[in-house]
Length: 179
Image (cartoon, rainbow, N blue to C red):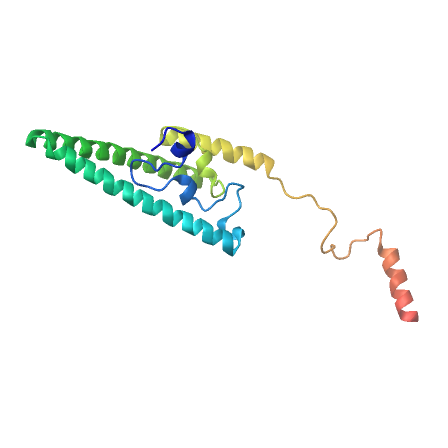
């Protein structure tokens, strides 16, 4: 791999996952991939296929390098390296679990406070109580902003109420009768 920023920007993470720019169905200008047209979708599909092939090749070479490295190690060194890999995987999985649990708490707090869908992402706090307090605060702010829409005079009129346009209605009916 080269030392240029352009090469590093397109590099895939060590996990073997595709870069976010390739996984994301959004184009650079924010338009969905469906808005690209047939040629654009084909080109994007081809690029994604190429990235997957390159990632597979990279993973194959990484596996070969690890095997070659392992060949020169003693049994205890191999076990230590494998144990380190398991510890790294365990730590990343524990981090992901913690993140998912926190997101679940945020969703619950938002739902209990009656926030609109998707607003759970805006909650801040480390404990369930902090998240609930933040959700209630946001809900109170939204409640003060969301008032009933002003009556602009559109829609059905109340029956029996005299309106300023009653005289005009009478004139229209008279004109219609006369023909």
